[in-house]
Length: 116
Image (tube, rainbow, N blue to C red; front, top):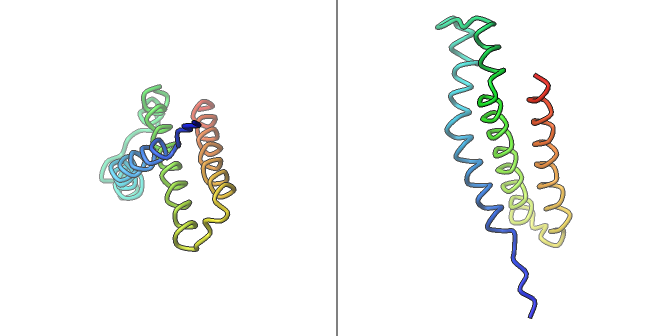
């Protein structure tokens, strides 16, 4: 008997955690950097923002947010193509492109965060 385990539970875990992380953190970042700072509701100095960004914990959190959001996108897009456009016959290439794109994006995010 060949009992090969499916990676589906891991993919659903990444999907749900990516959605939760994005739902909790992205609105806060959009509010801060899209509304509050441009409207001068508070004015952090460049040195302060630079110090926060150079902290390894901040980089780790930004990487986690980026990677999880990318895997959330990949899973959602995969099932949109499967069910919405009825492309289940192309399941393997779609999955490879979606999750491969998420992995590539995560590697790029890590490289960018390491060069700061």
